[in-house]
Length: 302
Image (cartoon, rainbow, N blue to C red):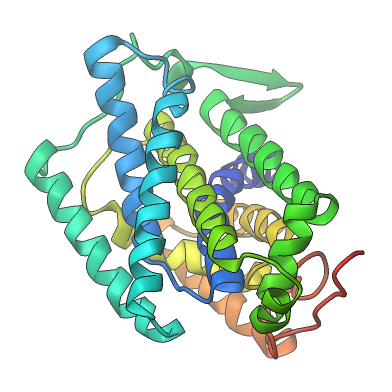
């Protein structure tokens, strides 16, 4: 039963990993930008959540009503800079890494390097759990899983069923052809970059809900989040959710049966084995848009 418990809690934690990864995945898959600054925005979302709770006692979940619009605007601003600079795909990796380092240093300067955490008077969820028979479902992980499923499935539905979603998919497949059909790729890119920033705000809130905050946390996130993006397939929305759950469950079971420090080793061995069989990710071409030439691209719905 302890293994079942580890699988369940790990899969629920995977909802948070998916929220951290989905913005990076769609930016890479649709905008051709490997936006490492996304990790900096997650960090800002976590610290903004902490600060709102400290100043005004704002419930962490309600804090996204403030942080999501702020990081939406920051995402739009960063994308405007990237577009103005005319960054190539892999150049964006270097530039956005610099932006992430600047963000980490700003957090160091404003909040210091000390550990920060939401107190129980602000975060009552931290000590709550639901019981499902013999299984214990910690409330922070249950919230992370629920929000991850709701946001990612909602985004997938929007991409598949709305005109804006179809335009984004067409833009991702062939910018020139989409522009010839009257699609304003500049405005759509801004919208998508802003939405990625909003997901970073939600991911930051979920992290603050469950863990202590430290400015250097993005260096810890990079490995696990890239694992989710690659396994799910670049640009795959639902693939990100499933991959997040798989990675969370695998890491949790490894921590139980072996040791916590071995979880990343096992996750990356699994990635290598999976990519030998599925070079473009386990779910590439299954549900959404991937990079041209990196998996099957579905036709844009009419």
